[in-house]
Length: 505
Image (cartoon, rainbow, N blue to C red; front, side, top):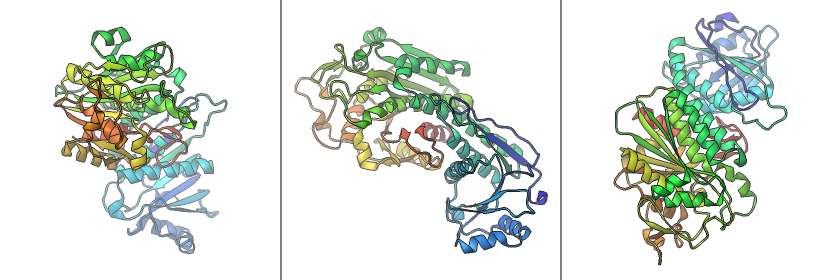
């Protein structure tokens, strides 16, 4: 079988550590002729020359399987056969790539995740991957790098609390035209992966082990990458007049924190990424009920995403000036917690009547957005938050909702999301009249109307004249079952979207 594998290969080893991800990679020009599985791609409308040449060596057995199962090469469909006795392989997996003009890096990454999950199920330890003319372009280094990216993202596991964590390793050898180009492409993806893994681990961690102080300590680990970390405590928040953020944290013994992570990779005006960081959301006195409360450790996924993005940019040594500003608090019930009907004053100067203590995310964001504008004067500000159940009812879990009056930014971010399977759906701003209060400047919830929109409109009060986008990732932060590039647990949603946008603009 040696003659079907080119001399230039990228070898990728994927494994899981006892705690989270710790994927290991090595590059080699050696071919694993005894690999467990051979993976070959089959385009729905391509020439499939690689497949045809391979089929000749197996006396037409591959084509027979294709015909019997009516396999057309549709995207993400697979079929397999047990390799003939004269083969060095045990299994041959044929993977459909769909139509040539529809296959992009997002779809190939998703394939990588799904194929990796199949190989883990098969208990395969090694696999050779053959690329063919499945895209209609001569760029199989892009295919290899993004396939590996997807496989590695799917392989990530948060198993810190399991008695017997998974230890299976799959080693992939990719048939590529240029090892140099593949390594260069993957190196950047590897930086983004590191940011995704950080965000996933922070989101998956249990609330008692991921308090605002724990999050701040995790952020400080980025200092080794040249990221400047600033942490403001409750007394400092009071001095700055950040009454909204400080108030949300009063119900917990640690209080609130403002965590700032600044990567200055250029002298351009900074881009501010603002993240909601509610490390646990009980709902406060407007307490949550039902099974959903067990998932409220993920209410800091917005903060995790923007911190992960800063890590990705720092590891990639990107020519970008990016600052993440994260309002951190645990929304708990105690004698010190704010009560429904209380009024707090934001650093912006606006007073807010708290009609519902479970609408706390917009409160911490309001002061974090003010701080980002006041201290960094950003050219663009994007906030990311698991903000409203209304967003889930509007667009579900396959999309995040995006709000802005800046058409250019919305279009840029939407395109970036399409490149990495983190899709956005635009919803309107409006209904300001529903935020009127009899005793304060505004209320923290709308009196009726679409909840996701009134929440976004609340935040608009704190954007000033800065170009601003709000992204609501409620429902996108956690998954129960793995699919595509996602493993069970925290998804790190937003890191790849923001990284793609930053690097492309």
